[in-house]
Length: 375
Image 1 (cartoon, one colour):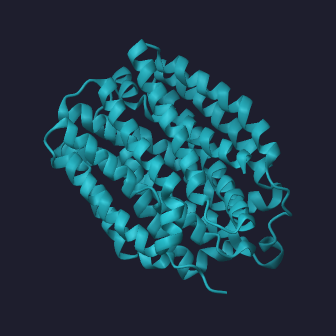
Image 2: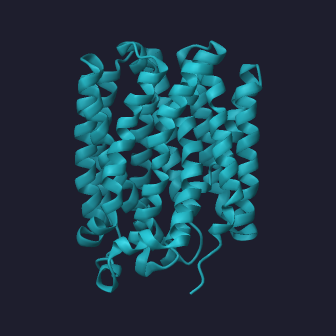
């Protein structure tokens, strides 16, 4: 269990460390909102290339060896991106593609392992693993904010993050459960999951929630700087507030999840996210916007982990279904950055965040798909 926590934490730490420096990358390379959106698209494309076949890869190698391979890819991507920040967008983009490629399959593998631990414990814990991811993102965001204030370069920061994950993650996965190679590959083709109505709808739900969460991760700091005129460190602090609220809600969420069920809880949280987004966009004052960021973080806290748990209800097909749901969900990171970027070019980055409110509304309407699968 602790090995799974460590892998989730480090995955979040690596991603948020990059995300916390997006405003400085934008300034260093003189990118407008449209171009920045397209640059951020590289991470999503990398993830979407790797994720659809993740179920097959995990079935062959197991979660531990898959994560070890993918962390090497991600570390190489961070190193390339670190050079690209000092050099040119043409170097940065391939690095970000590699970051997304490694992170995508790493994400599926750690969720499959988390679902296996949850089944063996016989109570909800997936949300807490994702809280571990959020702990990592908070640490990454706060670290980024501190390094910005200290004047540490983006290049030095990303190189340090690459070294940290490359040293720690391969050691952590040695503590994973000993699991037989995923049995669904002996029963049927894992790609069969792409034809299942419930699995596809779960993917759409996760897409809506991932879009809303990812918009906060990619654009909240920029929106605060551009929309409210705050300093870069305060923009990163607002981003950290969003992540901290999401982390706390994920840690304490299992009790509410067991009491109220997946559907009722996530409907209430979707409404919370909508209110928070409206406060950020239309609050008109930095304290209200920061309060809205906290509500936004709470509102999206359970969507992704509950979607993963729902996809893994049947252990025979967990890897294949988690791969499908993750692949669809990560379309949010393909469409989100450029959509917000193009909208930001037309109406301003802050107003463009209203697109996330529309997506979470769709998630609210289809949340009934989260009901546990019956044998």
